[in-house]
Each structure stands twice: as structure tokens, then as C-alpha cells.
Image (tube, rainbow, N blue to C red):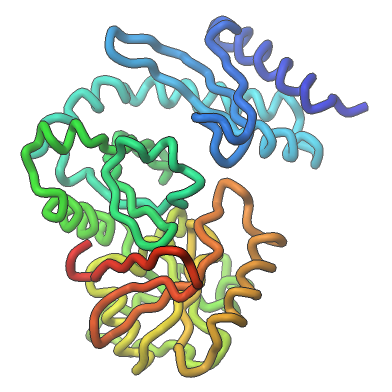
Length: 322
């Protein structure tokens, strides 16, 4: 007989305590909508405490419980959690983040990640970010990396002040870093389905032959890492290159934080795209991967991104500024 969700969480706490020695008092369960759980229930495990900071591992418990319900044993789930905590401890994140006030030391580790501005309103209060409609382009610093999994931290306003740097200058640096950390790629559906080693198309290579779908099907844009790949459309030169290959302005449909569909604006209607996006989010996008329900457009003449979904306020940003 399977455990209830509440029992599962209590056994998670007990298992983590037995395997790591972390006391249960240092484990806090927060329901979705809380300050530290905006997109899903989380178990926050505090595994180290310093004079000026805590080190915490956040576990999305609904996802873990779904894995349990579909056949993953409790032992396997705990082994993975304990392994993650051990790797985080060994990566000396606290020591590395102490360098954060030295811009010259960490500038090559800055990058941009996309979040929904409304959903993460609390987390973004003192963060450094730029807005486009309900999308926040958030400034992060890479702390460590293990097997392709990046540990990072948001840059706060007080850090930007300590650097004494202009925000636009820092964002340009971070966008360029993001490009090289995770280069943009176009992914073709038929290749993804039948070729497990498929690494996407390097459409930014000016020496190669790059072709995009100009019909209603659209093009799947992400990055070589695929994780958090929707940011690709905002990276230096990408929107300009896409507009050139499509020979048109284009609509952007952000099906998750990991990818964005690029559509020739001559072939589709934004209202139709909005309906398709709504269905996609309901059927296929996990809550933690949600970015936006709105449709955006890039204008090649003005070099601006705009939100075409009706809203109270219209925001725009230029690809030459962010």
C-alpha cells in the first residue's frame, strides 16, 4: 500500500536525518505559494549555518512523490537526495559565494535566467533583473557545476551597488557569458524523436547553411544545454539572425523556461498561438517550468521585443540594450 503524501514527507525527513545527521528541526516544509515555494511544495533542508548565511537544499516534494507513485522506491529517492546534499557540501558553495563582491573575480560567471515576474514577485524584490511584459531576465552567478547541473545564486541590488557598475553594462556581460556557456540551437522535432544523440542545429554559424521552418509549424529554439534554454532568443545577435533567416518579424511562444517556439509572423495569428500555448501549458508544462501565457513578438526594423497579448501596461526592451 502506498504512503499518503503527508506520510511520504515525514519519512523523507526521517530518512534524511538518519543518512546525514541533519536534525529534523533544520527541515521546513513549505506549501506552494509561500515565500520559498512560489511554484510548488518544497522541503527546505538547512545543512550548514554560518555567521552571515545558511546553506539550504530545496526539494520539490510533489515531484518526488510522483516519482514514488510511479515506481521509484523510497530508498532510491533518499539516495539521490543524500547524494545531492553531499555534492553541494563538497562544492564549498559558501566559500565561493564570498567572492561575489569582487566583480573582476566573478564577472565571467554571471549569466541570465528567465523567470515569470508575477509568480516570483517575492524573490525578485531585491534581485537585479530587466522586464519584458511578465518575463523577468534575472542576473545570476554560477557557483559550481557537477555533471552539467549548475548551482547558482541571484545577484542582489546591494551587490550591484558594491560593484559600482552600471546595470546595463553588467547585463551585456552576463548575456554574452550566457551565450558561450550555453550556445543557442534550433531543434527539429523529427531529429529529437528518432536520434537520441541529436544536439540541435547551430544556426548562428554564418559559414554554414541554416534553414528555418517558415510555415505555421514554427521552430523550437533552446540552447546546447536545453535547461533554461528559452533565454536563447535574448542572447546577442540571436533575434537578428532569426529574423534574417525567416525574412520577417517573428512571434515567440514560450512553452516553458527551457524552450521557445519561433514563428514567422506572416503565417500565424497571435490569438491562435495563445490558444495553443494555453493547451500546451495545461497538458505538458510542469508548474516549476512555467514562464508565461503571453505571446511576444520581435520587430526587425526597431530591434525591439514587445508583448502582443493585451495587458494593462506595455513593456519593451531592445536586443542591443539587454
